[in-house]
Amino acid sequence: MFYPIRVVVVSMIMGSFLAVYPGGLAADDSARPFVPGEKLTFDLKWGGVGAGKAVLQVLPMTTLNGVEAYRFEVTARTNKGIDRIFKIRDRLESFADINMIHSLLYKQKIREGGYRKDRVITFDWKKNELEYISNKGTPKYVPIMPGTFDPLAAFYFLRLQPFQVSAKIECPITDGKINVIGRVNILRREKVQVGDITYDTYVLEPIMDDVELFSSNADSNIRVWVTADPRRIPVLVKSRVTFGTFKAELRKIERVPVPQIPAEK
Image 1 (cartoon, rainbow, N blue to C red):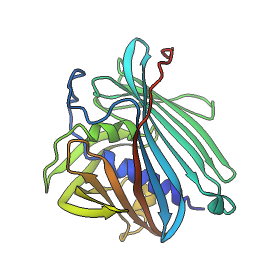
Image 2: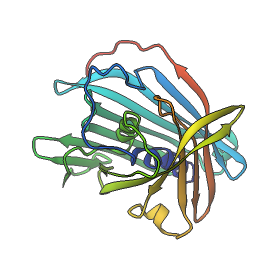
Image 3: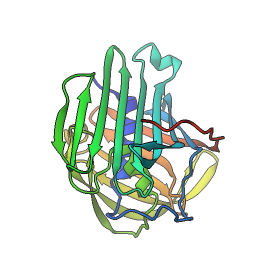
Image 4: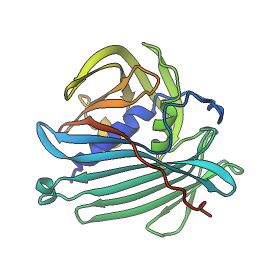
């Protein structure tokens, strides 16, 4: 069984988040490229066929265990035509400290055909370990490196960083099961047309040797086009794996109203 929509979404997140730097950024830095209310909508395509959409959002700020936190979300869903073949309704949610130094909490809700999986990953920075719970089962505890991000939070950390052509960058990442040093090459600067808009971008090449889906074929690869302006918005992702070619194309950028919500406990 394969999951074409997940491949594109994983490409969007894992393909982008690997280009990160150690450190973090001061919470009062006014140059941050994202704010609560940002919403990016992507069309997902399998070959030349529309397969669904993905939405990346910065949700209202919250508080976890007394720590002010960013809250990020990505959802992916197939369209009606693909639903008849293989219906997908996935949601990932991530919380990172306001200084963007590391992750605090990561949640996955996977609904793909008849497959159901709920995961919760809680980061304990006093012990430098995470707690991993799958489908409300027995917790597992995994040591983590300082400055570790989950895939979704690390994508936003990427957007805070300076880019340089030919740079090779590393950072610790985890999804609760895979705990590795992520790597990326910044290949070049390039103009690319998506829809009716031409963007000035950097082209990123993630190195995915530790991810089985992408390492199973020597010809597999991912390319991510990220705007060269300070916003660092992904506008195009292309992914080739053993069972086909997939794309995510930016369709809409929105700034939606942000309601105030109670802090999480």
